[in-house]
Image (tube, rainbow, N blue to C red):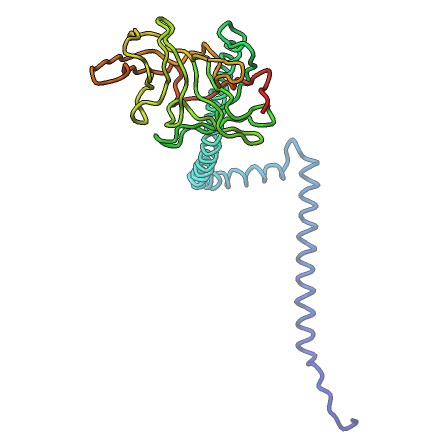
Length: 303
C-alpha cells in the first residue's frame, strides 16, 4: 500500500475554477445592489428625476416595438377567441337541442295525459247520467293494448280481478257498447270486441221493437249486422239499435237493457232470405279506444 502512487489535481486547474466562480458571484451581487439602488431612487423621486426620465426614455424607445407586437399578436388573439367562441356555440347548440327534445317529449306526454283525462271524465259523466244501467257500478280504466291486426278484435285494459272485474262483465264507453270481458288476470283483463267473430248480443230496434242478434259483419272492417230479424218486422235506415237485456227467473242476459249499440245504415230484403238483412254501424269507435267503463253488477249471481 505504501508503494501506490496518489494522483493529485493540478493546482492550475483548481485556481481557474475558483476564480470563475468568484467572478460570477461578484457580478450577481453587483446587479442586485444596482437593482436595489434603482428601486430606492424610483420610490424617492416619483415626481421626476433622472431615474424617472430614464424610465420614460426607455418606455418611449420600446413603445414602437410594443405596438408592433400587439398588432402581430392581435390576429392570433382574435383567432383564438373565434375558435373558443365556436366551441362554446356548439356546446350551447347541443345543450339547447337536448332541452328542446325534452320539452317536446313533455308536451306530448302532457297532451296524452290531457286527452286521457278528458276520456275518463266523459266516462264518469256517463256513469252518473240517466243512461247508465241500474244495478251496476262503473269502473273507468285505460286501454293499454289495442288490436294488433285486423283479425285480432280484442283489447287489454289496466284493471283486473283485484279491481272486482270478472269474466262476461260488459264493457262500454260513453258512446255505446264495446264488448265484454273474456279473460281476467290480477291487474289486467282482456275484452272481446263486438267486431269479434265469437261476439253475439241480443238487441232490438228502439223505433219499431224489431228484435235480433248483433253479430260482426262479413270482414274485419265491415259494420255490424243485426241478424235474425223477421221479414215482416219494420226496420229503417237511421234507427237506433240497443241491447235487449232479457231476464228470466233463473237466467239473465250478460248485457243490461238499453245500452246503445249503433245506427242502422242498410236494410235489405230478398224473396229467398228468411230474415231481413240489416247492417249496423257501432256508435263506439272500436278501432281507437283509449279508455272504457267496465259494468260490474252490484249483486253477483251465484253458481
